[in-house]
Amino acid sequence: MHQFINVCFYRAIRLGKQTLLAAGLGLFILSSASAQDLTITEEAFGCILDWPKVRNTRFQHSDPEKLKEAMRIFRDSVPDVEYPVGTILQLVPFEAMVKHPREKFPNTNGWEFFFLDISKEGTKIADRGDDVVNRSQGVTCLSCHQPAARYDFVCEKGHGCAPIPFDDEKIAAIQKSDLRCKKH
Ligand code: HEC
Image (cartoon, rainbow, N blue to C red):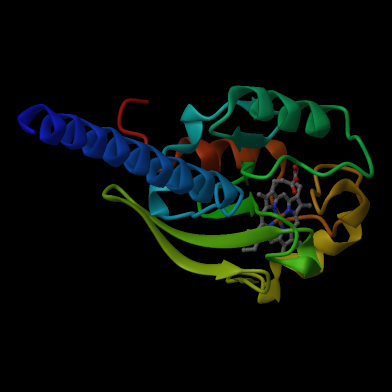
């Protein structure tokens, strides 16, 4: 009898483990299903000089392979190709574009525009979404980036966007003046 109870006890533990395992597996599946659904907080941003660049544009992606792919699409100006979900692009410290799954922002193939408040203390998100207005020019980010739809809304040079009032030298100077860059 004693032994029987013991066996039952161990079975119960084993069962418990299996249940835990199954529950764990369920959680894992759930979390990987929503991994595509990227959450962007101010933690995603930092000193712009720490990010690799192609020409004027800085790149970030948590997956090094996807980072490489994003930089290649940009460098080779590949048309009709979407940047990997999770790509973050910045030209100046106070503006950013983040690529989500296209269902999230259908008007922009999934791109979310950000207007950021930068200080020595860090980054604050001042505005975000697909209809963010550029404060200095009073027009939406999208209105300028729309003509580059064939290049997944990335303007670069020669993709049809209205020009910004900064030349390459000025852009480099603005990047260097990023207040979050302590060690540079
Ligand atoms: C007056 C038109 C205009 C407006 C408004 C504008 N952009 Fe751009 N943007 C450009 C152009 C042109 C470039 C490419 C400049 C270059 O590489 O020299 C660019 C480049 C960028 C880049 C680098 C990737 C790329 O597309 O080349 C990001 C990121 C970006 N803009 C974000 C924004 C955000 C966010 C806003 C709104 C807060 C915004 N832009 C508003 C014209 C504009």
